[in-house]
Length: 87
Image 1 (cartoon, one colour):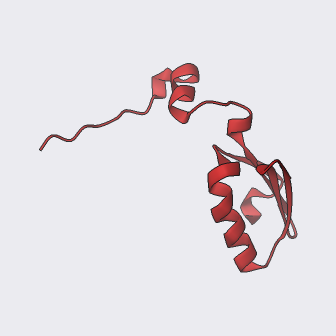
Image 2: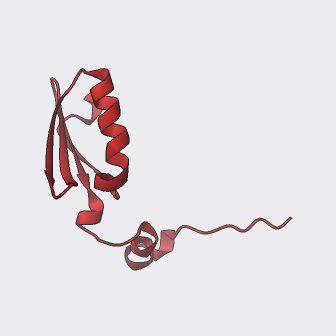
């Protein structure tokens, strides 16, 4: 966290999935001050503070589409490929 001080970090679908793991970990460690901005059970932002500050936000609130659709729309050159294994 210290290396990311004063950074904004985005997770896709953070408010409904990743946030539970991150919040549980932060609470378990009990070393950080945490501020949560949420409304209607949707987490918009999580501020983690100690001697530094890291802000975690949900990118799906900015670009409401799947990661696959985002890659098709904005960076098709680097699109994830689905591999099929033949046995």
